[in-house]
Amino acid sequence: MSGEHETSGEEVLHEREELAQAEHAIAESSPSVGAVRAAEALADVEPVPGVAKLDPILVADNVSRHFGGVRAVEVDHLEVQRGTITALIGPNGAGKSTFFNLVTGFDQPDSGSWSFDGTDITGTSAYRIARLGMVRTFQLTKALMRLTTLENVMLGATAQRGERMLVAPLRMVWKRQERDIEQRSDELLERFRLSHMRDEYAGTMSGGQRKLLEMARALMVNPSMVMLDEPMAGVNPALTQSLLGHIQALRDEGMTIVLVEHDMDVIMSISDWIVCFAEGKVIAEGRPSDIRTNRAVIDAYLGARRALPDRADTPKPVTEDET
Ligand SMILES: Nc1ncnc2c1ncn2[C@@H]1O[C@H](COP(=O)(O)OP(=O)(O)OP(=O)(O)O)[C@@H](O)[C@H]1O
Ligand SMILES: [Mg+2]
Image (cartoon, rainbow, N blue to C red):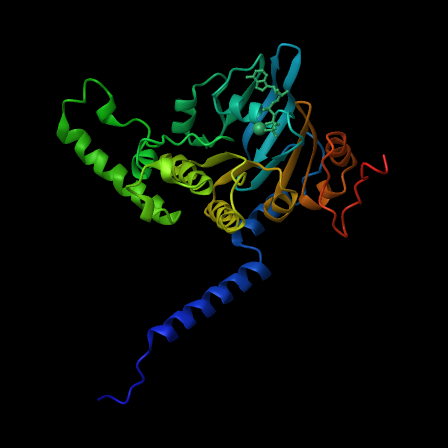
């Protein structure tokens, strides 16, 4: 028998737990490289609506969309800084989802133009925009319940050769591509801890798992920008933490994230920059510290009977009794 100490399973587990705790502590105490980069890029940007950014990946001009008499979106000018987590906030019906639909090609505007990474993509189809590197997820998840988790993720790959009629009979060509797509899908399932659901119907997943599935599917095209419409809505607290971790990790890898979210604690903790919509317009922009005390933002939320979180550093919202 050797005199060396053999590590028991329990000790290994304990060590892993300690490591996880240490990693968590580091993550809590020091901002990530991506957060520092984003803060530097936005350091000299004035917190005013429509302000220019140093290196914008998305630029929108005079974008408007009306539904009958409702002015759903009327954005004069908006720029999204590359490599940041930019949050869109605003009361229900403020035009956040409509703005997402317009810039990602899922709806057509009444007027306006916008560019992505220097390319004018006004009126471009969602499919082409995705191929250029801008993808989005939906407020209501769009998983296909009668397909497996893997098949749902594989659908995110654009320009699959086997789908084109002329090439479809050439099995050799698409078989190889399909293998690559399956491999990438498996990597993404692993990343989002969904591998155990790989061959299950998406219909059997929880709401939170479907949100993760949608993110995995969006990443199939290796996008440079991801727009997430309420990725945390209806997700349990543990999975919310994991989603937040994924979103930060994507930003740290250099991706630009634009997300719509109603939970102000989440917004304030994760965002590098916040854009507030009200009645279709951008009424405020800035860092979380700017937005927390912004009069127009507070008024917009109070007008809709929603309040910013009651924190020591937040002006106390007026309650209904006081109004
Ligand atoms: N397809 C449509 N037909 C008619 N009106 C619409 C349509 N889509 C949106 N609207 C209206 O446009 C306005 C903006 O809606 P939108 O869904 O963009 O708001 P939102 O900021 O995403 O709200 P929420 O936070 O509730 O998701 C609302 O008044 C809404 O009723
Ligand atoms: Mg919406």
